[in-house]
Image 1 (cartoon, helix red, strand yellow):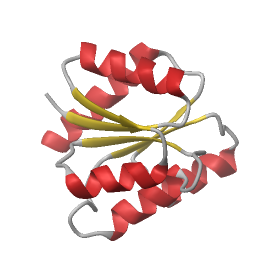
Image 2 (cartoon, rainbow, N blue to C red; image 1 turned 60 degrees about the vertical axis):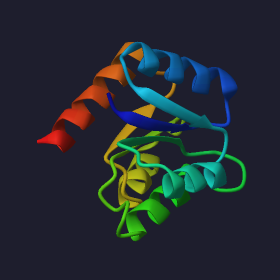
Image 3 (cartoon, rainbow, N blue to C red; image 1 turned 30 degrees about the horizontal axis):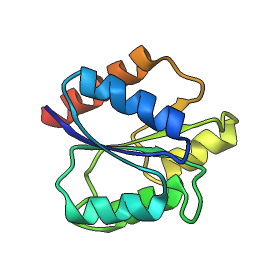
Length: 124
């Protein structure tokens, strides 16, 4: 069982992702903005972050950069979830330190598979 943080300002997406991951056996913490996500990252041990790029206050890109900049969390896997699908947007996501990039709308099954694949690679 992995500890996963979901940060997305869209409650429907947050709830859908949380439901699917809990159903897959993961422990999920869900927040609605980047500042709350950073707070959780600093306070709880986590195995994976799922971050929306466009959130009020602090974007998922900024959260990802902060996570990568801190020694304690630099290796924490990050998957960005976003509607931004242009090639330049994807490049920005990876440049910020993301390990994967999922474009909305997405299949909950695909998301679960990517989370499992990421966690499997990290456990090796």
